[in-house]
Length: 383
Ligand SMILES: Cc1cc2nc3c(=O)[nH]c(=O)nc-3n(C[C@H](O)[C@H](O)[C@H](O)COP(=O)(O)O)c2cc1C
Ligand SMILES: C=C(O[C@@H]1CC(C(=O)O)=C[C@@H](OP(=O)(O)O)[C@H]1O)C(=O)O
Image 1 (cartoon, rainbow, N blue to C red):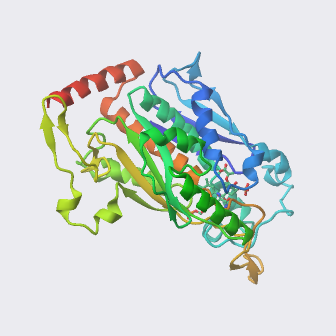
Image 2 (image 1 turned 30 degrees about the vertical axis):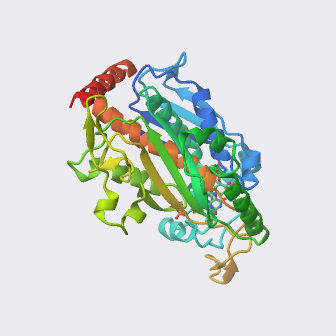
Image 3 (image 1 turned 90 degrees about the horizontal axis):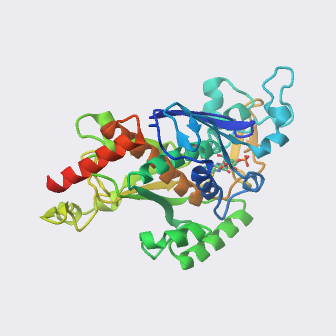
């Protein structure tokens, strides 16, 4: 399964084509829209999220509520486009004078993208660098999550800590309904109240915040990915996806950075076997991956999100046209997008996992894949 996306942040719409999905996945727009809604939520988002109500539209590959095996084409309209029609017009002769952006924002793609592509209106960089594109990647991820759910796999994303505050309540799957209802996707209301205070304070001071996000998956079979070649190792593939999320600057599998400071005897998960369970572990400090393959334990993916780059109290920069000192460009912005990013991490990781299932179990139809997965699960038990 592969996919491509297109679309500018303030253009008419976002688009995707997904190729290689099996026929027979029951799929409606309502499988996708709740994930889009989750991505839009979270305390600390800016005014853009008030304008948008993201909804996916099927353009191809789905008929009568099922995938046909043909490429699936998706679209999401940008409601804000109506305010940018002139500026985003592809026709010549309407060059955008009004909102030309020349004061490169430190921390954004503006300066490197401007130099690389020769743009002096940095909007030509901003429009595609914007995390707006993650709306469409989450839609693709929601399709992957639907596919995985038919194989008994479930995923979620949440926020273990942000703005210098760690949740004191450890994650458990029972807390997922609380996480879904909470303003910051945290497990712990007390930590959340303190973070909200810090977000308000940062906003009042024209500043921004980052944090740590986590995605978890349960129900995965062991042996997804492979140890035999570098680009088939699932840890590397998941890391690439995680680090492609705008503002994600670090990634770990399980408590990797904590493990690095310990002895091997405190880190590796002993292996046991019983006739009822087959092989099993009582700990999961590996985060569900060994040798580039799933172990069958819960998959735990963590990532670090830097604070948002656009500051209302701007950092010093240079105007790329005049070369004079300037204040970095700003109009409106999120103060933080950490909760949204936890949803993005879950949805995008699901794409990698769906690809790994399709590689291992192949199949043109969902039914074939389900049969093969069930047979494999039985074989794993008797291994
Ligand atoms: C959901 C989400 C929303 C974001 N919103 C903003 C924003 O409002 N303003 C901003 O400057 N950066 C925002 N970012 C981060 C930038 O897109 C990102 O920092 C920029 O593209 C540079 O890429 P890099 O940080 O990965 O190097 C957001 C990121 C995510 C994941
Ligand atoms: C539009 C989204 O996020 C945007 C990501 C973003 C950025 O610079 O990355 C900047 C902001 O956009 P705008 O400049 O239009 O206010 C965010 O709102 C979204 O998540 O759907």
